[in-house]
Image (cartoon, helix red, strand yellow):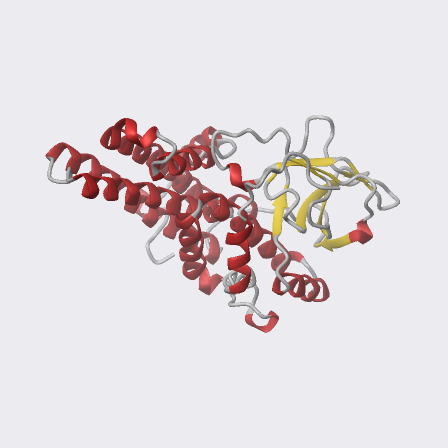
Length: 350
């Protein structure tokens, strides 16, 4: 069954290029045929890779970040045999993803006989992700991670995906009823998926992609000023300078958040607060660079044939991550309750 309402938006050529150049396999450790990007000591390389992919295309960056997230969970929680089997799939070019959002009517469940019932919603790459990592609620209420084997173009309904931006992510609802746990692989123990700090701290990866999207907007802003000969205007220079400050501040904070999450030497709450600080900063930076570019470029930037138009739409949509107020206030509460001076909360050597 073909995915309902797919159109031709999915970035097939771009994902194929990531297959050919080894980027899809890169998160795997070297002994499983990858470049080891999920290893703690390669966190800067992974961060730069995510930013590069996001700079080229935010929808592709979103899909690749989900692929990396799924493989990171497999490498962290699956047994060696399962890791090897799924690594083979990644080297074969299968696109992985993490689908954890559920419709309001109960979501995905796993009965005592191992049968799946229900669906996942807001599934990026629906119909094209063939190795999704999903969570299914067991009869005792705990949630189990599974990587399911899906055929391309099946079980997906994209008819409701009418988003302002990020349209090429082909996000939809995927039905799993009728599948059995044996149609996939079990990853780890029940409730491993939500273990902290890995669960919340992993947000640094999508932040790295968003930094790439912010950079693309700023670069397009710069290109417009240069092409129109308006770069000498002091008001334009001031707006562009503010954009650069927002971009580079975000890059630095995400680098620190990535290092903090990878090291896992600080207390869980401290790691999560540090990543949430970066979350708040990146969101504000993204909104700021969009507004500054709009003021500098003017009406031309809202026309469909201007490169800024799609980049602004995609960034504005991707910045709408879940629970931003929770992340901001939780971080602030943690710092207010801490006894250490501010300079000791996230020391530079972390």
